[in-house]
Length: 271
Image (cartoon, rainbow, N blue to C red):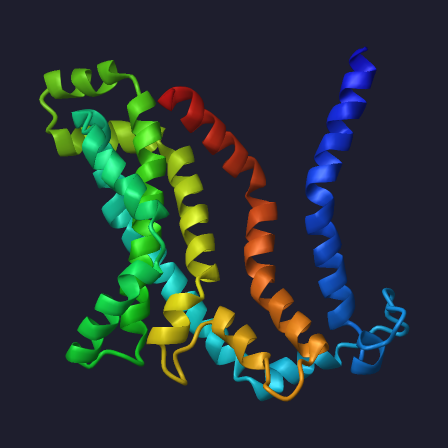
């Protein structure tokens, strides 16, 4: 019975992840084939021979490296600012047991970014900042700050209150207790919050397509630029999609143990 249970679990996991694996392999196949093979019927799945021409075309014709640099600046800046603001905010909300503030953070997290876009666009237009990277960094805080705060609330709620109380009795201020006691213990949560905030910022499309200029677009917008009205070139489109996905995929694979450990610890402690 135990062996059957393991087999059933393995089959269930495979059934859940197989569509994602299939789509990724199909995208990889499109990126490594020429357009003749991509349009062939019946479909040609295995490239023969594989080609890197689609990747070269994306790099040559779409200013892709500039967009990649823009994404790096925006995502790292938005993630860093979110940590600077969100970690202390999560500590304050957790220790003051401000459940209403936590609920507001959750509402901000699940609210579509499009709801903020129009007023923010008008403000940036009035300030003359449209077409620069500053609006993208600021608007991405709408995404990253709630993620960081929500993750950190769960971690700080699970920390033993006796440790901070002992620091306060010994003469430490609340800020010193946060920096020297709570912050080191919450390192797994900070790691998880950093990775999640970076991924969501990197993948954001709607803010980049509206607020960015020709020279300040981010990588998701670069994929959109590969599309043409006359004909969809599946090879370059798939190559661009893989190049956008690669950093996030590599980061997730490298940090998967930290993500699982951090989320599990936060869930157990926060519960």
